[in-house]
Image 1 (cartoon, helix red, strand yellow):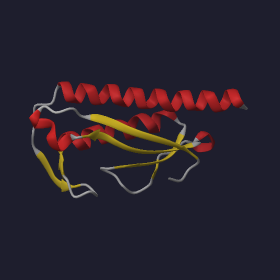
Image 2: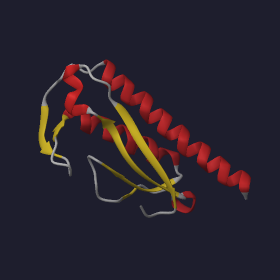
Image 3: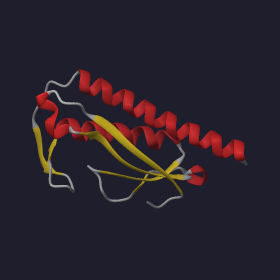
Image 4: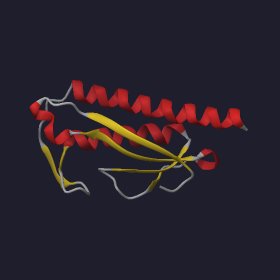
Length: 120
C-alpha cells in the first residue's frame, strides 16, 4: 500500500514538473503582452499568458490520472479532472504567480498545493 501511495505521489509531482516545463516554454516565447479581456477571481486582469499556463497545468494533471480535483487562480471552481479510481489527490495552484508584474521583468513562479482526497 505504501509503495502505491509513493507511486501516485511521484506521478503527481512528475505531472506538475511537466506542467512547469511547459510554462517555461510559454515564458520563453512570451511576445504577446495582451490581455484576454477577463479577470480572475482576485480581480486581476488576465493575460493570454495566464490562461495558457493554466491550461498547461490542467492538461498535465488530467494526463497523470492521479488527480481528482483542481482549482487555480484562473479557474477557481473545483474542477473534476478525472483520475478514476486513482484520482487520489486534489490540487490548488497558481500556475503563473506574479504575472501582473512580468513586463517589469520581476520574478514569477508557480505555486502548487497537493492534498489527499477529491476535495480542496
